[in-house]
Structure formats: C-alpha cells, structure tokens
Image 1 (cartoon, rainbow, N blue to C red):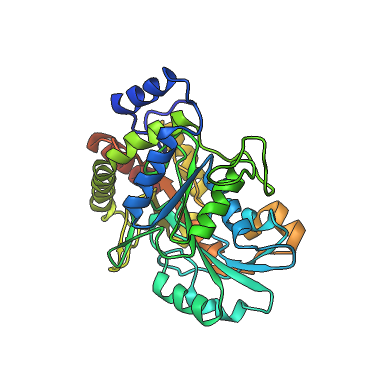
Image 2 (image 1 turned 90 degrees about the vertical axis):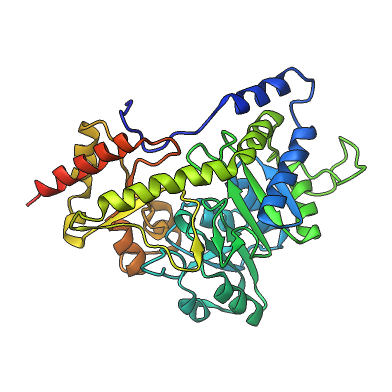
Length: 375
C-alpha cells in the first residue's frame, strides 16, 4: 500500500546517484577504493581507529561475537527491548542471551539490574542505543571493567548520537552501525563495525571476506572460518555521499523531531519522546507513548491512521515474547514487565528527513481526531 505519509523514506540526492553511477563505470564493484574510503569516513566521524564495512548491521554484530571468542555455553547480558538481531547474533555462536529489563524513560538496558544477572558463564554485555538514545555508557563500562566482561555497543540506530559529548559507537570494545533505508544514512543494505582494537578489526575484516588473510594473503587462501559479509562498492559509494551530508541529515531529523514535540505537546493521553540531559540524539525514529488505557486501542489507531493514508507502527515487540524465544528459552509474559509495558504502548509516527511541516500537521491533526473519538 502506498501511503500519503509513509513511516520512513530515504533521502537520496544526485550526489548519491552520481557516486553509484561512477562506480558502475569502473571494473571494481567489490573490495575497491570506495570500500576503504567509506570505512575511513565512518571511523573518523565516530572517533575510533578502525571500521569494517559489512553487508548488514546483523552481520557486523555476528562478527564481533565471533571475534571476542564468545561460544557455546557462554552467556551475554542484553536487552529484550530491541530489534531481534541484537540477541540473535549471540545465538548464532551457541551462546545464550540473558535479558535484563529496561529503564522506563530511555527504553535502554537498566544498568542497576545487570550485576544480578552475571554468572560464571557471562562473557559480555551487549547494550543497545534504542531509538538513537544513548545507553548509560559510563555505568556500563564500570560494570564491564569490574567483572572483566567485554562491552559490545549496538549503535545500529544511533549514528550521530552523542553521550556526554562523545559519539555513540566509541564506548565499547566494539560497536556497530546499520544502514537500512530507514536509518540516519543508508547504503541500501549495510552495516559497519567500529573499534579501537586492531585485533578485533583484523579478525572481523578477515571473517567478513571468507576468512582470507589480511594484507598479502592470496585470493584462494583461507586462514579461518569466514563469511561473505562484505559491503560492495556501489553501497560504499552511496555511503560516502551520505556521510558527506551527515550534519545536514542530522539537522533535518532534529527539525522534524522538534516540530513533532511542539505540535504534540498539547494532546492528552500521549507522551512525547524523552531524552536525558547527557544525550544528543540523531533521531532514528519518532516514537510516542500512548497512555495505558489508550494503548488498548493501538491497533485501532494504526488502522484508522492507515485509512487517512498515514503509516504508523508499533515499535518494538519485546524479543522474549517472540515465538522462537518462548519455545527455545521458556520466556513468558511477565518476565520483563517494563519492556512489556513499553512494548504495548509505543506508536511510531512517520519520520524522515524531508517530512514537511504540512505533513506533520496532517499527522498530528489526524492522530488527535482519532484519539478524541475514542471513548
């Protein structure tokens, strides 16, 4: 269905189109100069030494888990309120995701609950910057250091966000960004690993390229188990163009978020997004909270907004309540009450760079009208 106001839309200009077209006129469509340039741009922007481009954020997370030696029988503490890839990547290597509940304001993992979940099997904490709001990285680093755990930063939704004036992606032993079309920047599909650890970077680069040796290795020489997780030259060219516009893009997203904040502030029974004084958001999505009573009508609200040709969505269904996780690990409703309550109340509104003020007015007016008609 084509919506008058879609949930998301990539911001593609002639700069991106021309960049991709130039690559198509060369013989180098993979592992060329654009691959190196894009990685360098992301590393410099994030303030880390190394970046490894991959074909998705999920692939990037998987490579980090492998590079850290996390394996069958190990445990990784993480959040149940996230996109499912942040825990699936742990299962790929036979380890177990151990969930702890979230902070009710930021929707990020609650540091106060982590130490109670640490066991002899725990090897890492994997925290997520949910909806681009930074996690409490100072507290997470203290806990990781105290218990000698790896700290993995899933910043797939947070390129450009900052915590205490430091860029997301620069706090953990390694982190990731993702570039699906609804993200701050896009490469179509794609992701990147960011780290200050050369060993992790080299392992991830090798494993992403079928386990080939880094440096002077031969094309048909494979020194370890690897995968085809590379990001192609066309995607890298698009990413380079997008990164050259990152300040403009974040500014546009802040404009949209600020307009929503202003125009939604007078509507009862909803809560606009929270952000802490230590956080600077690059705004992945714009998610409001419905009151507990109104949340029982969320599906109705989404369907009525769709009738007005406005695309909305719930964001997220807690991971522990996904069918596979309930079957595999025995999770049940009530295990993580804050995640479950937030999961029932969220409503994502249309959000993208060039969303006009008139479109925002249409979204807000339509939402207000629908809510006011609910008894």
